[in-house]
Length: 273
Length: 241
Image: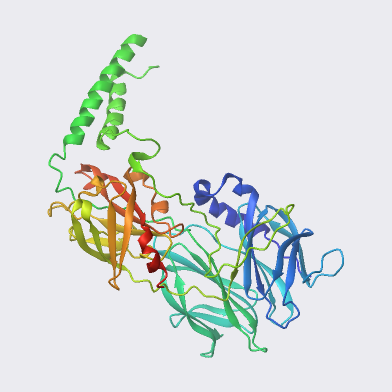
């Protein structure tokens, strides 16, 4: 039984999301949160088909390894429990559980059901950084949720996160584009995952999970993509002015307007005396 | 002194009028538009949509569930590089435009680069590609240059809903679009995030400058934006991926 909490980090992420959220997110969003659940316990570990409950209500039905489901939930405190297929809180003990998980309004989080470093099933809660990015940028987050030792994560052959251990993560904002991703055993040239082509689109958060078990030889990559977080470019300057025959015309109009309004203002001032 | 003097009122009003004047005193239309003809397809820019390659059936929910599923995906499918060919040419018969499309990015101020040669246009390299089925394909072109005269998109403002725009891709296939909206925005109010969004249905977004030229800032006051949507005969192009 673990007791992860979203409390502090969750609030920080919500505050970051607010400026971009105001215009784009429905009005009730402040009371809602977006929670994704990733089934990252490999097949054959006793959790091939599970049901996920939150506060006793079915959250996800018939959940299988390698899949990710995203659910909108009211902000609040949740007891999460994972049951074998068809079992319920009324008639069985959960395979996995996490109590009192704080989910603040506006937060975007991912709960992973995975193996810990020693190979035992575990639940982990990660807050997803969905703060806006400048034009041309993408965010890459890498999470180690595999029964495996520490790893280095490489992009295009360069180590970008060193010595990442289960259940930790690394995050970086990079120029949008196509990369080749690989995972090595920490401090070695031994590649355990990849290299695999990875597209990081402008304005997307790509979360790569290393999951599975080194011992069972089923280490794999899974990804979660959150889109549309670009602020867009700052503008489109697409004119030089050479076709403007009368560039001063606008100022002429403005001057006329100024005269008219000034006149009205003077009259108004006179009337009020 | 309890009351502003008339001289101050005049100064204030003059500044206000100057602001109006530089946008051409165009108050037609409503909201943030300086002018608007037709309508862009509605696109919800929302940060929470799960997108991975394969959508699964959304599991049924009990009517009383407080939870709403936004979809289930196969997370083992990595986001693969998009191999859809980029646009290399654009033709707009209604305004006699037929020119090349270069690849453009961002300048040091994070503004979209526009090809130096005003006769050419530029495809914003982080935007969607023709025939990919989703997102905004952004092509920018000068209305004019500092000393080169009229640019490729000089007459963009003359386009009307129903006019045709055809893109040629690097694989020589053409993708046809039909204009659905022409909008003019004051530069401080251009909805850049929506116009450049990668989500929503595929659409073509053409952008140039308009309004009055501000000789002090060396730029125009407005952006002219034309939105076009794929015509039905493109159906087979989306399937070539």
